[in-house]
Length: 472
Image (tube, rainbow, N blue to C red; front, side, top):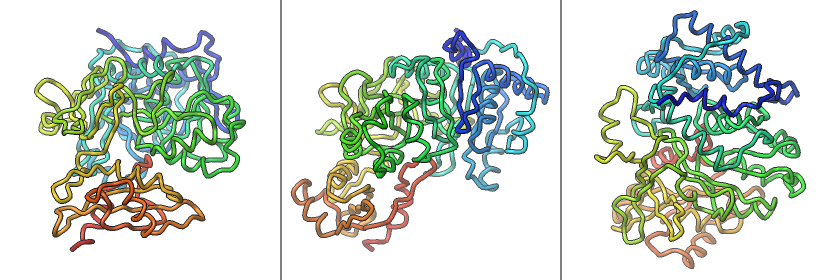
């Protein structure tokens, strides 16, 4: 089987290659023909420097059109693309260089040199479906980062599924405000656009003014939950402003049911939440047509098997998955690879969840975030949902830390909405009406912000470490 990612995307290119693929805020645009020729020139430049199929290309640059062209050059020539967070330090980079053993490391200066290569036609080689397309390192919240190996087939199959499920066509224009060192911005967003012949407004990052200004000329926004909470703080977010938009997608971190309801109330649109991870791409999605349920990530995507292992009396258990989108394992890490798969080939996601009677998946948290207090299981997501529904609460993180009597004590860290007052006493009183005693926080903290990673995901490991001695 031949299933080249770039060939799959190219089948969706418009017949007229002069059609725009990327539009920058300056109103300059790059056509599909430009993408082909410029990425072809970079691919030829990489080959001239001795890079061959299977070689790793380690990349640490900011978001730019040239960076995207470099990615396209790599995948079409069979070079393994390995993106890194631009915020990594020199010491962190040293680990990735030793682990990936790249044939070339690209920083901003080297990217500029490669991008200056003359545009050229490039004869794409045939690539096996299982050949590596990319290695993405996980965040490494527990121990060293692991390099998830993603094949041509992994990425192409997921792109084709999402384009179909989310109804992308050549008439779409996506607002691209995500970074491109991560699955969401690099794969999900760009693949849906290029594989359908659509176009994207290329923004350097999240900018509420730019996103709101772009909405009348756009049809789709993909973002993390923080995008939506920040846009909700804007008085100019109105049904009129969003009238040309057909789809708002949220991922990379849990979207609160409260944000989901608030967005619908302000705009008339229901956000489509989906579920995926670095090692698997997208796994489940609320439907494009049909009920989008606040707090749920929807049914499994076509071709993806999801099961709940070792479920408790409430149906909550470990989420395990299998499908053409799932990694074959971790780069040069046989032990972690073996730990991550069941004997019958399902990948252990590390997440806990349950299915409802209609086949919608509900994520209740990471297995490592499960709190066992006094012998009872406390799922942070349930406590967070109850607190986020209270007046004045912008966001909350619930964690467990060592407790001398209960084993673990539940702590809630709350961020109030701007100009709102949230008191511990009111929260405690309200939760007495909605949560059993063992689920209620033993300590409530009010903060200005929660610690987050580059994709906006709350770093609960940081909170657990900081608060570990609270009950000592």
